[in-house]
Image (cartoon, rainbow, N blue to C red):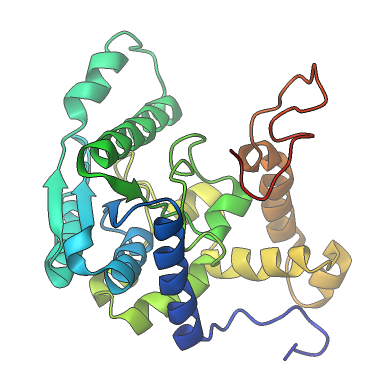
Length: 276
């Protein structure tokens, strides 16, 4: 029920969501001919939720968790990733990406923190897809709806896996589901971080809390104007912060633009329910 004509509430029906997402994973992997999944376990709540869902959907023997630390990664992140692996009893790999990342960046000594972070994120996807080929296990995405709408991810990295069970869940909804699934409190309660740069936090980068961002995004996506949202108590600075990120990152949520030279351009005029 809407609150005084406002957007739908962000309160999640966790039982229904759990059932829907585990069924989604079973169906999507079966449709692609996979029986196993591989997941990058970061120590954060997003990847933890995906791992918990995957184990419920596929069985622990069919899920592989991969820790991919860099030399500056937080020790706590590694510990929390292992906590998820141990709690679920899944097979795991630890692949230190430091040498591979540094091998490239030695040729780009002036790379700033953003470039370095993007290299790390893309190297992690190279690792997951290679291990996917080794184990015949489909990589699962771990990006939530808030990150995707705000463009807070590395293009062709975090968004690369072909199946993402949590991509339509706002961060605050993900926290609700995490508690329901039994993700350890130490993971759910900590400040979210991409752990690409020492001391970095998501909310520090975004300039707004996930709680406020989710409410504003939910309103905007349901057609509420800035004026209507201001009337509901949101500050103009908050609205500008969110709308700039939302409007300025549409390109990240689209496939590459293709120059059309025929009537059957893939992804443009050649649209089919199943591509083949």
